[in-house]
Length: 209
Image (cartoon, rainbow, N blue to C red; front, side, top):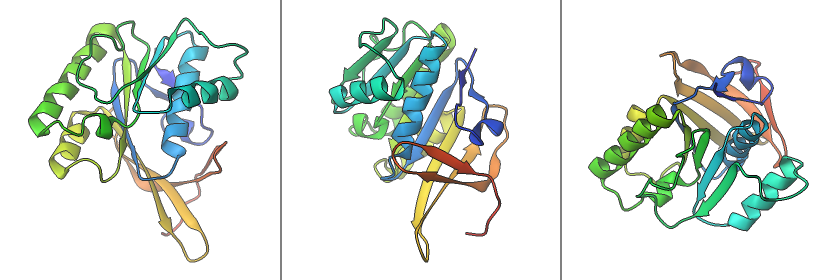
């Protein structure tokens, strides 16, 4: 069973992240990416899937956000682990129980890996997906990867979600794109959204950007 996408509107396009799949979620400075990854983690927990988070900083802040957003009354969920690391080069302690493995700032945590080293790491992650049935989400920061490394991650992923924002004539225009998905399809359109730090609202109306 996959991890449901609990964002109204977006769930009509991608209802879930499939089990044993690897998805890259990319964005610039917009916080919607990390918010979306937390939503996936909470959806997984509600379905009693184990969740492993690997982050580069602010472990306690993430813990508090998950408690608040998930309306958890106490910390210490037996199915939730959060690791704060400076690099992501060993897989032994992550995702061994299936469920969801979310690596936020994946591009930062693998900054020192050359293209072939990154390819080897992503291939080992894919092997973990298939062996343990783990769904893996790699959140990357646009512009941090070298072009070769970005191409490696996108090529080896089963799905890619890209959050974009640009300055419009009156306000910031935010939209996401799905250039690659599990069944071989892609969504060749801009999917507009609004984000205020607490809510991700999808607008499925077609517009010209």
